[in-house]
Length: 110
Image (cartoon, rainbow, N blue to C red; front, side, top):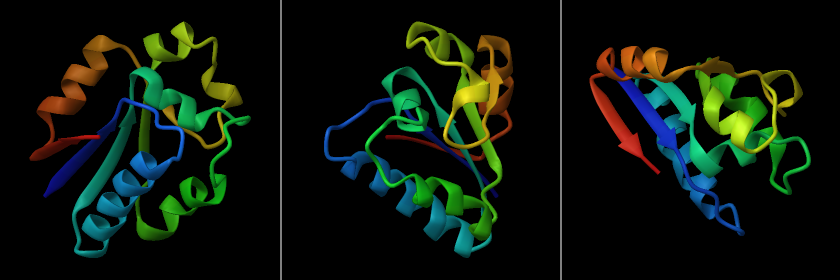
């Protein structure tokens, strides 16, 4: 079963990100194929200067979460580039995001 977590907002205390990652990690432990998509202000979690625990993002691969995507339009709006993010993420245009969404069994928004 494929699960996509969409993270599209930013909170000052990072609890929003922690809840998203916890849902993903728990799902991955139970054998779901988990992907993450950062959109809107959510892309700011990936900025290297963001004051969050970057290690929790880097540990995703340990749990088998390797499909990490980022909305390229949101990157541009926040003056970021995929090569300067805290973790490796594949930029997607609107068409590729649509394809990603249709390939999922379940989509959760955070």
